[in-house]
Length: 150
Image 1: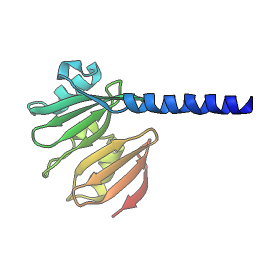
Image 2: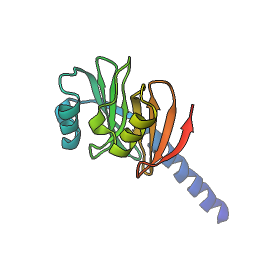
Image 3: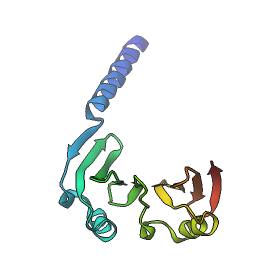
Image 4: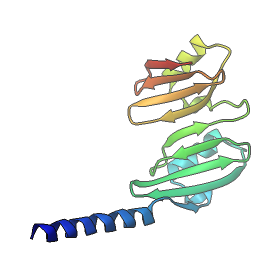
């Protein structure tokens, strides 16, 4: 009887693994109008005049996210609700100041006067910031510096 349950459990686990793999990483090209409203507003407000090269919806077992890539190489990633999770700017461009929490922006401007933010990632409890000089700063969710990696 134990062997029957073991085999049944193993079969169910295997089926779940294969069905998960089949569902994972479904990238679908989308138009900007298919983004969550909050993401559309952010793009209109902070990336006005920038030409979009590609936008897509990423679906996996844990939900969906959205990516927008501009022709100049800049990229913005959004969660399912349209909140930005990552902003990357390339070729000497800065992350728009209006998207950076004020305490982080103030810290960078006061301590690193000749550099600017080229990449910012927002996670549940922290922000990771990359500066134009290659330094990486980590802030807690309240904008307090907690780590520096140069």
